[in-house]
Length: 264
Image 1 (cartoon, rainbow, N blue to C red):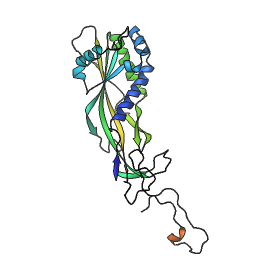
Image 2 (cartoon, rainbow, N blue to C red):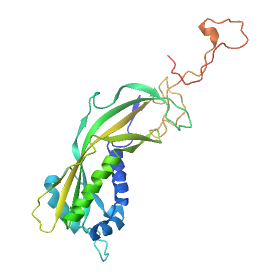
Image 3 (cartoon, rainbow, N blue to C red):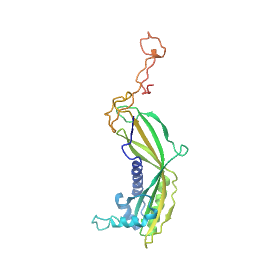
Image 4 (cartoon, rainbow, N blue to C red):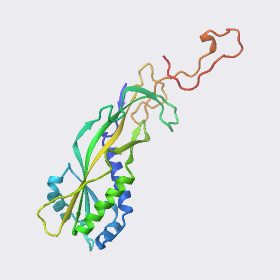
């Protein structure tokens, strides 16, 4: 038996959070000139990922951002305002009381699988600390972005993370522990610059899919034997009623199962 993990388990959560933040950026209401310019930018020039939770390294991250401009555009793509996104390195598994992990392997069929294979699934419930730092040249713009981010998180408290299971894209929920975000001032010793930090606690459900190897007796042989196209487990397709004490002379079976129930 092999457990399929074709990607680091936290990457889909990070990508999903980036997409969630991108939707927030597109719907911003521009109430300052700087925010009007900020909303008009492509999202890749409006937010950047930073290594680790960097509340204590905000100045270093901002200096790196503002000095990293090779576009040659009249207005630097590293101009303020900007959102810096960081994910904590510590990842905590949640208890059964706080999350809903599937600790014992459960037989499942993936919706949309054209081969109708049966696999085994477990899930992990995690908590990932995430931080969004908002930096702007004026306090009105920084405060507006932070307030609108608070409102957005209150309205949209979850998003989807996409995982590849047996080569099929599946979506799994990521919730936020508390949608109310506290933004605090971060003094970094730079004049004419306002920096606010918002902490998130993301709670993703991470799937772990198991399947038999090609030479195992319970492999159904429907796949190619690869991580992206594995074999499934054999399933019970048909049982005649005579096996359950029915009349052996009956012309037709008394019962037929075709639901993919697992064979003993």
